[in-house]
Amino acid sequence: MIVLSLQAADWLGLLLYFLSLSLLAVGGAISLAPEMHRFLVDEQGWLTELQFNASIAIAQAAPGPNLLFVALLGWNVGLNAAGSSTGSAAWALGLLGAGLTMLGILLPSATLTWLATRWAQRNRHRRGVRAFKQGMAPLVIGFIMATAWVLGRGQGQIDTDAGLWLLGLVCALLVWRTQLHLLWLLALGAVLGVLGWV
Image (cartoon, rainbow, N blue to C red):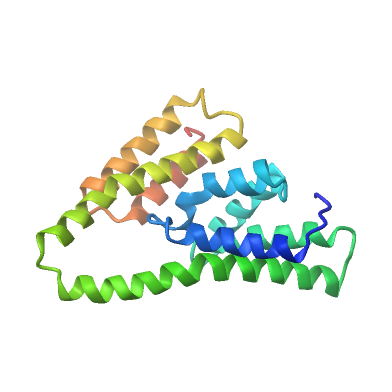
């Protein structure tokens, strides 16, 4: 845990940062984990490496959308800002951090999605709309691979685990080129993990 002294400008900066990230979250917020790590851990020092990785792991394990990790990142920033405070002060700052990060990541992208979906539905027959949809798939896969790199680097095995990279590449290609449901790939990954193969 880090003890922080955040001022109003820092909290505003946290909100503005997540507002700016929101429109880049093409493959979902998880695809921006490397950039969030750079800002929150490396640049600002508001979170430790362990807090960052635990936030993602807990949110991925919990039922519900994977976007929950953004709230946990904000929650941990708030707890670090509370320092040694406990009780209502820690809760208040934790909720403030979670609320600012969630508002920031959701508001712009939700607004843009609503407007763009209405427009794309009206213009779905246009060649440009169809080309855009097909062109986004490789970009999303690249973002997800970058996230795998950051999370794997925290475990210390990213450079040496060729099997893990091969599995990731195969899964990315299957998602991109087939209609295979993603849950089957998650189940396969879980089985391979239980067997100790990855």
